[in-house]
Length: 239
Image (cartoon, rainbow, N blue to C red):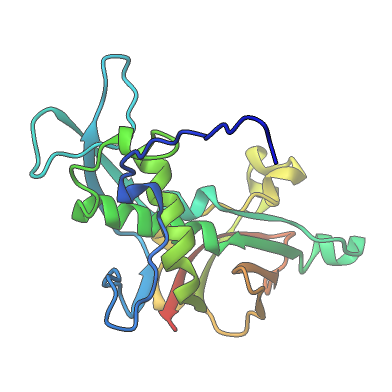
């Protein structure tokens, strides 16, 4: 038996419920965010606001109702898609490159969905009056992203993509500005291409479980005479 008995002393401290972003399911009912059954990422804009501190940065705080102390942000979904996809020349023969060029398209659909949900939560002020001191990383916006990753994003799957293409006759023989071959291989992501007449119906689209989308687009008009611009909309559905 120990000759001296030393008892450890503990203190009890209150812990804010916002220290955990996980919504735990309960047999008698749980609080779950009401979310859309279907989501279309098109050319819409989403507006939200939060408070900037004296240094011009924000941790995401919002008052209970909108205040003139908050700064307004307008987020366009076309820009969100543009920032989260790429289109590059595929490995191909010189003949294909000159005529019916193949392009690899990669889209981070999960990140597009993630920030769409973030903008919508900010717009609805779902986390209004949450203080950054009550959060583990002291950042409200970061905790909203964590909440989305933990509770919402896995409740959606990628459904389908509408892909639009518009060709332009470059007629190299008549334009000194298009004699550089690189200018022929310069597709632009433009909302103006979004038209049912420009819809591509035979594009083979593949998606991974974490919603990374890939596709190969083959030009149907010769690259010697035509360049193209493109656009796409993404559709998600709730499980």
